[in-house]
Image (tube, rainbow, N blue to C red; front, side):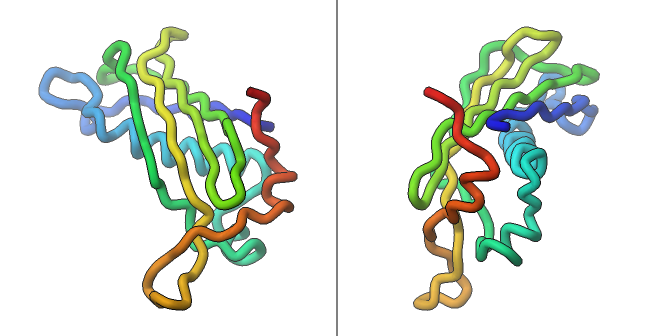
Length: 141
């Protein structure tokens, strides 16, 4: 499955004083939607570390285009799609809908984080295992 839908109900604390979603929250929800996409495909975070050597999937680029506001009480449907697998990175697209209408379009590029022997506390990009790619093929362009 190359896409999944993650649902979020906008709470009071997600909003600014005008009751509009405070924009950084979308990036937090994109992160949760990414985890949801991986788990929908049987790729659980702890297994990525234990079985596939990943220490995380750090962001190297994130963008959002805001088309309409979402407000307190709205239910957001965040459709996340794996756009492309690279050798060491991958790209995702997120579309946030409120009542079927597009509110936000987002994109992310993430790397396959692995231990960096030169910097024991750091990460570097590593080769994404073929077994991971096989569990979640990228969407057709």
